[in-house]
Length: 339
Image 1 (cartoon, helix red, strand yellow):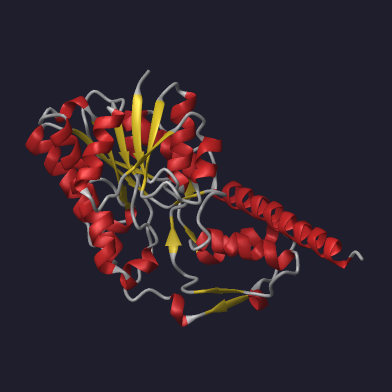
Image 2: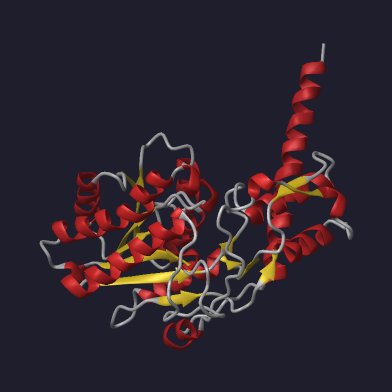
């Protein structure tokens, strides 16, 4: 039975990856900063049999301990402060976790294996935000990086550190340069989920509008469930390498709004959307679109969920969640009104 250690297992990608690896017969270990994490029940329900270990990407000894306990064949480093907007407000913390956390995880593997790093296959979650002010369209593995946020800078550091350990210590270390990938499990602070949750609440009469920033930004959006499959495929190759994972299509925030509102029967959404200067980035990234040719050719990977299907999936899920909350509130009010 292969063994895998996942940092960031409570996040969207960690949950999908844990599910997938469990279905493939892996023994899955997940790293948590504290056992009181409120997402523990969700992890345990979606990843049956998961073994949760306490550890912190800012604390090297705890990472060494986690590797020694898990004895993993594969390590997936998904842990990070992953919301780009927060990285300007918490730049130092972003650097410590999203950037230096990669170095500490690699060091933990090196120390725990006695410098025999090829015994453990390592995946680093790199990001399309590393391209930032793009030098070419679409972006591929050879495109130079020009990050435009503390998050993008930290991810770039982690990416190059992964390459360095591969070249310095012979580590089987790969980076997946993943473009935006979403799902119903996406956090509500991310723009896609902010839109789908907001539209669901507007359709049900719970709120009137959504406040957003730049509506012209264009992104390459795919389904997170597809992208964790690409992560796994990278670690099954004979030699380590880096791969862009993307759909090759780009869509604007306006298109996202079109699809989301259409799903609930609203054609003109202009009165429901407010542009708020607070949500504009200090340094904007206007367009990101990836070229997944290498991943398709070498990994045999391809996306299975299109943009419209993805947005509609998220809308339907948020409608179900909001209806349940309304029903729960009504039942509670009925109980309180009884003599």
